[in-house]
Length: 266
Image (cartoon, rainbow, N blue to C red):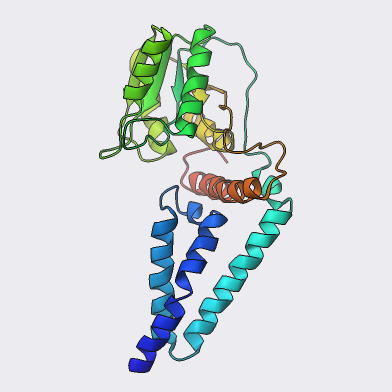
């Protein structure tokens, strides 16, 4: 047993490096958008330690080394090749339409613990406000995550007040995914007798998000916000390719799951 525990400690030594490489190429996004580098490093350290204890002397460390080398190779390939662009191709949807809508719905995003908006949340919100000020829709609908997450509508209302935008702001929730958002928005629209929505989210999320709303019977105008983290049309930097890779895989897997569950059309 002592030898197995020793092997577990040796194999676990490779865990932090494996976790950092996994997060650098966005593999944690295959599960969801939760879990920062620290959490992933913790999990991979525990996992590799358990592998070492289970497999015994030398075998555990060999598996850990093989995992690390495999992730290193993936990192290099993704950073230096066009694979990320190919994975992301077709995920963004933008409907060019001036049709009047009943409301703008902005899909939820991160709000910091101090109540300030993340860059993604702010980009989506600003685009939603822009659509309202052009007169295409008279009101804004946001979604709220369950507690203890901070409210999206509170900073949105503050921003609208500062900008002098006197439009109606509604919220639905709590939600945990795009499916929840689509169902609750559709319910709100049915109660109000509304039919058409301008849907705002990030580009790579737009096709699945808008399809979710359409599946609930709404007439959807898909209008993605500006992507602030990278230039999706020109993935010239290694950092951009690495970030798009994880998000693209997340959306591909998400679309597959949504189709299998009947949440979007095939």
